[in-house]
Image 1 (spheres, rainbow, N blue to C red):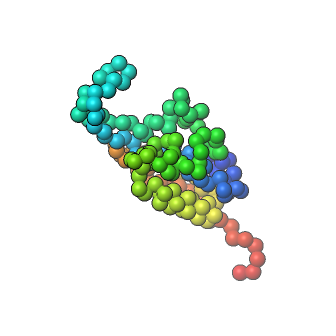
Image 2 (tube, one colour):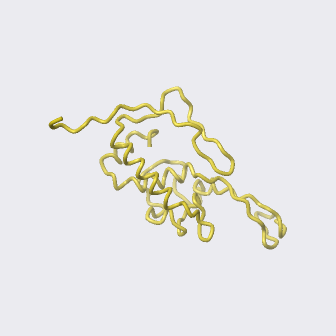
Image 3 (spheres, one colour):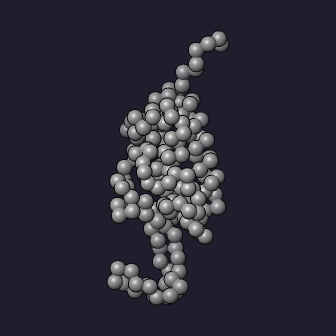
Length: 164
């Protein structure tokens, strides 16, 4: 959200938008980038045959950026009509950030709860939260991916008026 201060302000004003924000961030920066799978039988993809027993690497980190499946896939916009936020961290999710079906990450629900709780706390405690100017944003990792560091500037949130 810190790259989109107008949307951060919107979430501060309307905290129930936090799950949609979390879902959108996960779509743009999924924790898992690729998963290996072994072909059970010969399969043809785009005219090429993958023989039975071959290992293939599914680039699931790119799945949420497919313009044939999602409108404006590279845009951070909350709320957006796709996919359903309520099921975004479940085995029925339309995206693959935490796998799907039998391959759903067992920690997906915990990751959602943890990230939304921390974000809610930070939004209430830190005012004018933004990336530190001049420090480049960088992600790292091949299988799993995350921010190399998170350098931010902020002001403490003003306390509410009243007796101290």
